Image 1: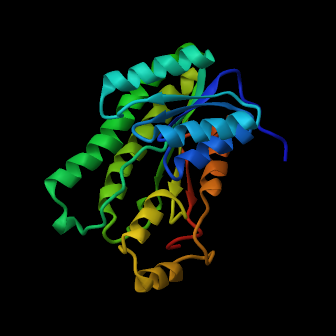
Image 2 (image 1 turned 180 degrees about the vertical axis):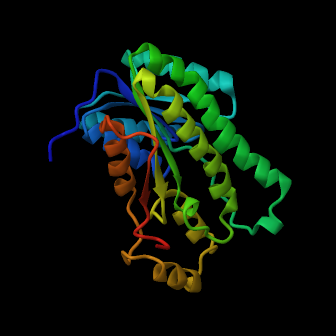
Length: 255
């Protein structure tokens, strides 16, 4: 397979220290892009991911920010641009571990937390990066959404609903910014053996009955790998005539 050609500069990965985000960051490094990793609290993980990318011959830097704070996001973006000269791709992989509750049992506090991180955080990331992408002659956004966007999973509303707001924003960016050579797409994430799924599995949230019922809905009878999300993200970032689209990486969940 021919390695994708990236312009000078780096891929900026928000949530690059997360279970899926770190593999996405590594996928961009393997594909030939330098990488700037934005993390909130897992500095040790971010440093390890950067070292792994560096061992493959690409430059990787780490930048701390709470995505709920616009000033922190702006500072992280400026630092990444200073370190790499340009950001050509922005990947949104940030997000909390989502509590699994029905809509009727969702507290206002949990709802606000999810909206603040996922929706306001993503908006802050777009506001901090969009002027730079315009000035640099273009680029792309890759948003990691939820396969629940096309098939509602019970108790996962705190993930699916906020990400649906971001899907609308992705469509808007694709519509409004294409004239500036800026594209925007999403990877709809299914059950992936990393990050939030493994954490909730460890907590006992998912039992054998849940596993059996969920796997009945899968065409491919296994859980996904984080690298498969990374590969999809790289494809969307490098195909210059794809915008406003969603790739459902979920093993055929619910079709």
